[in-house]
Length: 78
Image (cartoon, rainbow, N blue to C red; front, side, top):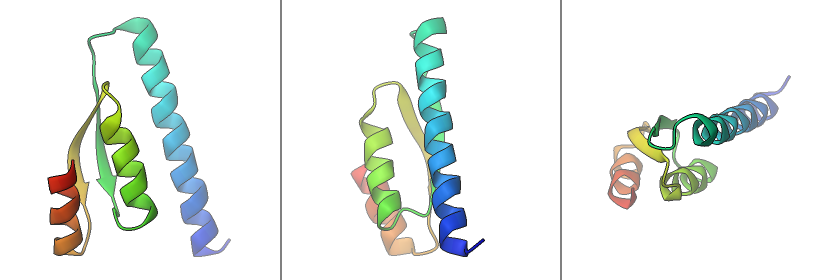
């Protein structure tokens, strides 16, 4: 398996799991929020971060990226 395909499938699995958790939270407790940590927020990660941050039931608790400038920019955006 190539690195890129592994990362894409892992990211897709994580998104599906998070969305499933969001749906199950709606059914069980409307006041609970989901806390997430985003790792690698350049390019596609930035888009995923923006999507999660726009959801009212999701709280972005941590943002991690090796590039301090990118990390600081994404934290300011969130």
